[in-house]
Length: 204
Image (cartoon, rainbow, N blue to C red; front, top):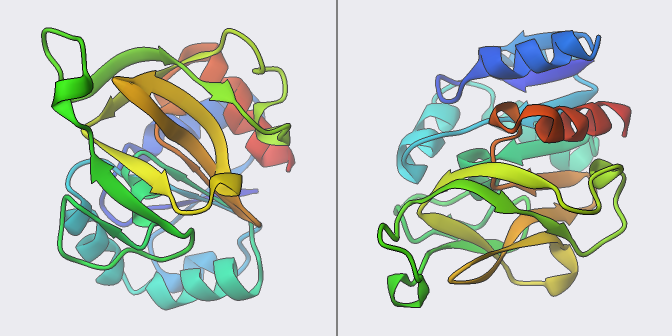
């Protein structure tokens, strides 16, 4: 059972549709009571960091999520801004992050990007795993995913980097620490590559 955290940010239905295609049951959590029997969690996110953090903090689910993730060690995957929320803080906003992974969210340096339109980083790009992880099983070579972001996840500990992508400079497009996973790209918009990854998460 996959529990998708619905705090008013992110395209929940896109994830539901992917899991329907691979025959994995899904539950949507809009309150702390909906989280009580969670086995695996997805934290989606789009838009501005502070807005997403405010939405989650005001949802009534924050304390329960901290308990599930930090104490009960339930597997969780943060996606796009959902990944960035797992960091300590973001250059995009003033609020504290969830502090689930020791990282800071930083803005791309436009002077290093050799593109006509430099930001946001938008479109398909390579994702290269640097760890042998079950999440990327079957995706070790030539996998491309869809990105849409201006800020990136900077891990304070290199061992937490799970995959890298090049955009002006190399950045962590996926991170992992214990039961916590983060991916900057959108698997729900990445066709069969994203479907494989989300199915792998369900099997962890």
